[in-house]
Image (cartoon, rainbow, N blue to C red):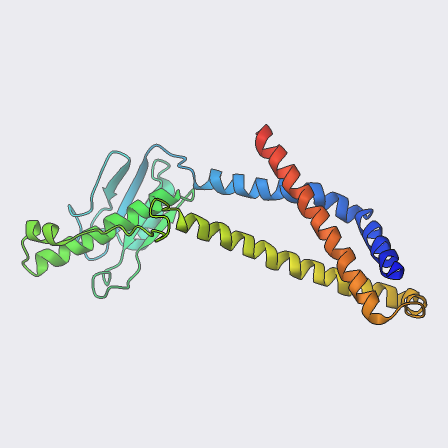
Length: 254
């Protein structure tokens, strides 16, 4: 047992003294926090309003697409083709987006419109444009099939689904728990992969330097591998707790 303890101690102290361990212990959580912050900044609404030029190839949606103060739609000249409208869009500094509605957009339920941008629009802007295009296609098909629009609106229903724990009906955070579980599962697999590679690299390094021949002469291969796995595992736990500490301190300070 003393041999295993000596190998564990050697493996642990050798690895935590490496520059890569020290750097990643403090840089890793900062990168994670920075990535989360960058994602939040990119998803945040940057503009108060969007000027959008619409090129409707089939001339079907004029007056049907919903317009409002935040998303101001401007229709492209009818005598211009798509390439010419692109040039207009590029030349006009006041225009933010070019919405291209191809002529085959209404033929099936899986066609794709295009949105050209100068600066990438926020996720809420993308969702809004998708919503008004789908709404316009629905209204067009309602009119084509001579369905009363009020009847259609009365029939069309949006249903929200609450996921409720049968043992705790007041708890409706199951989706949030699922996301948290997925994130932790990802980190578990990531750590298993990363530290498994470290065990393999440690064995290869010692085999290359002939140290393993000396070690095996005094301890069995099973004890050696067990000690290495435990040693690297302790290194992983140490780094994990350092990450938690640094993330907590960083979040508190910010």
